[in-house]
Each structure stands twice: as C-alpha cells, then as structure tokens.
Image 1 (cartoon, helix red, strand yellow):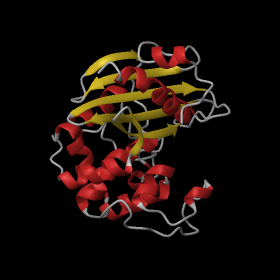
Image 2 (spheres, helix red, strand yellow):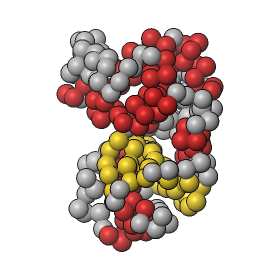
Image 3 (cartoon, helix red, strand yellow):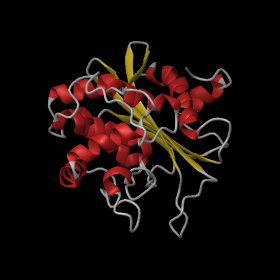
Image 4 (cartoon, helix red, strand yellow):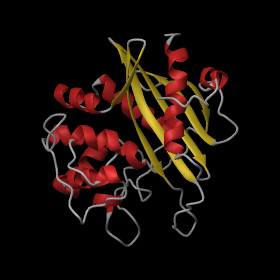
Length: 263
C-alpha cells in the first residue's frame, strides 16, 4: 500500500515532475511502449536487478520450466542465497515474484543454459543484451542482471513491455497470461496493475559497486480490457530507512489513481 506520508500533491504531480529528494526517471507510456510523458534521465542504462524477473518469467513459461502460478515449487537449500527470511522457504513462481527470490531466478537460468538464455535476451532486444557477468568471473548465467554486465534504460524497459503487450515477442498466450498473473500487484478503479521492483548499485570506474547509492526500480503496466498503459520509475539515492525500490513502488501506486482516471 502507498505510504500515508506521501502527500496528495506528490501523488498527483509525480507523472510530471520528479521529487527533488531523488534523481531518476518517471516514464508513462502507451500500451505500445511509446512515451506519453517522461521526466529525468530516462535514457540512462542501469542494472535491471529484479525487474529482470519480468523477462525471466516469460522465458520460464515459454520454455516449460514454469508450468503455472504454483509450479514448480522448489525447496530452499542451505547453499542458496538466503539473505531474507522469505527466501528460505519453498518457492513457487508466484512467491518468487512476490518476494523477489534471487535463487529461484538462478535455478531457472541454470536450467536454460547460456545459449538458450542469450537467445531469449536477443529475441527480446533487452537493453545491452550483455550476459557476460562480472569481469573475469564467468558468472553471467546467474549474475548478469545483478549489478553486473546487463543494463537497460527506462525507455528500453517501456519498449520491451510494449512489444510484450503487443504480442510482438512471439510468445504463447499462456506464457503472457501466467506471467501477468504472478506479477499482479494491485487493482485500481478496474485497472489491473502488474509490476516488479528492483534494487541495485551503480558501478565505480574501477568496476566496484558504489553502495553509497541505491538504484531503485518499479516497472510494469496497467490493463483494463484492451487498454494498456506502461510505467517505469527509477530512484537513485543514498541508502535510507527504506529501499529505493520500495519508495519507487509506493510513489507509482500513489500516483496511478489520478493518472488512470484521465484515461
């Protein structure tokens, strides 16, 4: 739910101007990915972090690794990344997206293998398409999207979602339906809101991560019948009491009622 501390004025104006407290971008696009309004650095490529779970869901369902919203249910193993308590449980596709479980993504990409993984990224024309991973580590299969080699701009995110919604990715209808189901986050005035947060760090010139800055994303789309609208929000800010990704999501959800009311 949107934070009650987020003012009504900010919620109404967010689509037109970024708050001074954070650099970043807000982009509002039609269902084809064409920008209607944008503010900030919307052409800057950034690590997609967990927003990459949107294309990963498409890959998973299209390849057959994911079969529906609840399968496969994979048990947690001690060697997996258990950074958050919610990651240390048996995980389904729906839970994977809800709790942004990194290790579930990694089991999917390992199952795909690098050749098929790269083919999907190329087919989707996703950002810079670079799955090499961290320099010298040959870890792209499980790390490329996690503040490593893969990067995408907000404008490219919108175009990717536009191609998905238009059916231009050549995916089965079941792939799109299941993916939309596990990415649903809210309903606003009859509009179904689908999206994914992501949080990462920028890189310094020497390739190390600058953990003094957070990159927060909230990327997704709103659907009502045959109508679609796409949103992309990034926040680049010092670490605070709340992750930049959570703030980005709260801002978007607070702004959407006023914006969708104009559609």
